[in-house]
Amino acid sequence: MEPCIPLPLADGNTLKELIQKAKDWAIMHGAGMRSKDSFSPDSINFAPFMLLPSTFPRCEFERAVGIQPVLNELMHKVAHDYDFLKNSLETTIKVDEFTGRLFNIYETVRAEGITQPFSLGLLRSDLMLETDWRKCHSEDPATSAPYCCWKQVEDVSLALLRSDYFVDQSLFVAKQVEINTISSSFGALSNVLVDLHRFVLTELGHLTELRNLPDNNALEGLCGGMLSAWKVYNQPMSAILFVIEDVTYNICDQRFHEFEIQRQNAKVRVIRNTLTEIATIGKLDNEKRLFLNDTEIAVVYFRAGYTPDHYYSETEWNARLLIERSLAIKCPSIQYHLTGTKKVQQELARPGMLDKYLTPDKVESVKEIFTGLYSLGKDEVGDKAMQMALENPTRFVLKPQREGGGNNMYGENVKSYLEKIKDSDERSAWILMERINPPVQTNYMIRPNIQGPIVTEVVSELGIFGVVLGNADTILENTQVGHMLRTKISSADEGGVAAGFGALDSVYLVDIGKAPKKHV
Ligand code: ADP
Ligand code: MG
Image 1 (tube, rainbow, N blue to C red):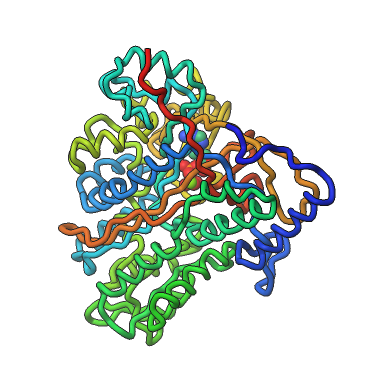
Image 2: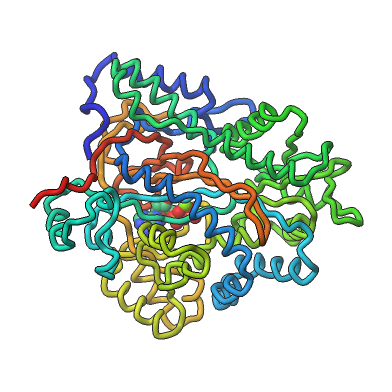
């Protein structure tokens, strides 16, 4: 894909100056992170960022944005379907201890009677553009044609559409990588990145291009969601609790949430505690209201607790159970957390599974963003998927039930690991996913303490934020609130922003990927 402006930029002092200015802009406007190498609570580095916004097809961006409320609805309904969660996770929880423990908490609070019927979802659906035409189509010819802006071309035969597809190299289809139901991060920094890129393009004199940077109010929407939950709880003196790690590197993103809550409602206090601390200072009263010392908690927002690394001992598990038992509205509640597992994502992609939750038109739109997902359980279906992956490992990604990056397997590692677990029950802890092949473009990646960035080949992953608030019978709020873009070096399997291969980015919309106009 073409970059937003011709690259490379002229080398020399002007580029150096621009980069230094952009770094200073980033630090001064909060596009920052604490340093892992030389941590200090008194200073921040700029977060790794792309110098220019990355090109993204407008039609696919709009499709991704448009489908978010449907995904919110789907996740909300699935989270309230105990039988589906139990059946989907049945074999996985036997071999994956972490998911098993989460499920136990779910069973425990369910058996006791769920105290708080409302859940808050601050979701982020992550998508990449697929360039491999074979994977852009579903196998079923009846549904294979109308992707992307192709929908506009209704009275052209399927055969014609197909042949046009071969000719037009610029067609891309957004496919879902995963959906996050816990600790969906970068809602705040993504706002800052849009402004940073507006600044850089303005510095470069590209003023007409600014209109192609869509507005982004993710932070306002996400915090608005927390405040709606706070209102549902309806106790004027109660606070919002952020559950945090011992050390928070992504501090700007979290603090911006805190400051935005205060901006929207100065009466609502935010407090931050680790699971370890909550185990000591947390208690329930006889109505199961959660108190930390003397502060009543209306909403619990988890920015930790999504990986086994956050549970050092039974103490942290006790804290999680205490929270789940309480009357506080959880973001996410335990069943929402479980709904975000990779196994549930894979089960939902099985034929017919969506029909229970969504109307037929919504089912079709969700199916369009799914790519191939396969169970690896020890049965005929799992054996078939295993065979497929062993024959062609580079076509797939092997995923465990983990969040936070760095856990998946790619390429030849898929094969060697599958060979290792082929005869073991551990197979059920993993799922297999088609590898998405995003389009490559060029950009400058700017990282702290690295001099002289050069034009690099990169690929991007779009995240769309959604807010959903409701109970088993009613959805009170269901909105799409904003987006984020992360970009990584094209040769990297994963692009963790803190890990070293990825950087924060924003979207530059272009009108490519459009279906050809009606013609023969
Ligand atoms: P996590 O919960 O650890 O974030 P993800 O499923 O999002 O797990 O995978 C982490 C990263 O791996 C993604 O951000 C993406 O860069 C890469 N990745 C995951 N699934 C795919 C896929 N199907 N095709 C290509 N890359 C993928
Ligand atoms: Mg992810």
